[in-house]
Length: 286
Image 1 (cartoon, one colour):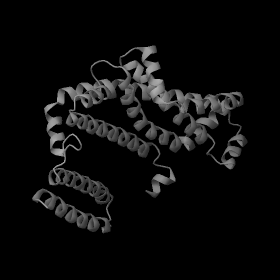
Image 2 (spheres, helix red, strand yellow; image 1 turned 30 degrees about the vertical axis):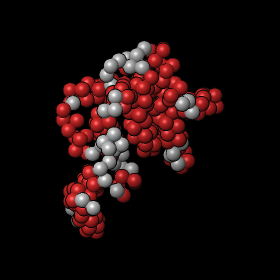
Image 3 (cartoon, helix red, strand yellow; image 1 turned 90 degrees about the vertical axis):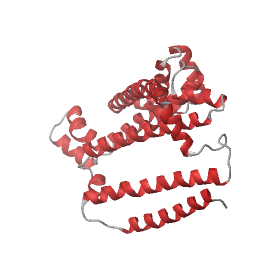
Image 4 (cartoon, helix red, strand yellow; image 1 turned 180 degrees about the horizontal axis):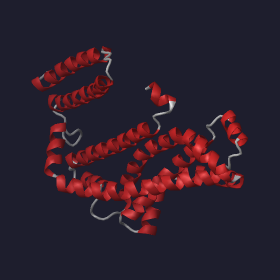
């Protein structure tokens, strides 16, 4: 056993003991609890990277099979302009625009379905059909319809994010209790008054659940859609191209950037949820 592997195993043992000790702590202040909640996964993540590096060097694994984190970091720092251009093409254009349109369309369609029993019986089953469409079949069609640039990828994102928002919003609109709805009718409230003052607030946790699910689906959809035709820029284009060239470190660099962007996007939605639904019992109990 060489020094790289031995050092990685020793680091793993020390980090394991540290995390065990941190997990047993029970600080009283909210700030300390939040800091502890960030520190534990940070230590765990760093440990994984160190063990990964040690295993690659310890067993002399080919970089083509498993690229060490140090090589991935070197590629990231040397390819920032390319990574930034790919991020702009995939995330800032296709993902964000498709996410906004898909979630917005799903929300408005859910309101229409809730308002009309005809749409509830006729349109909701079609939503199930749309959700079952395979992305690898839809993406080439969207490219033929909207061209090779980002609008075709945004269209794929719209299809992927529409149904989760639709289903969660429809379910959330029925989450208010019968007693609350009867009370609103007692006060002679209209449909729209009951919707905005009772049913939508009760549906807010369901809506944010769909927003969080879609924050990851949107990025996956845009990257996969770029495999089927795109300009010479984009995360999916770069991954498919560099795999063919055996530049696996660049592939891992794109994967790391995509994971970071997706995690930050999910975290932003989660923070917004906490700010908007602070009154909900699930948030108060947390």
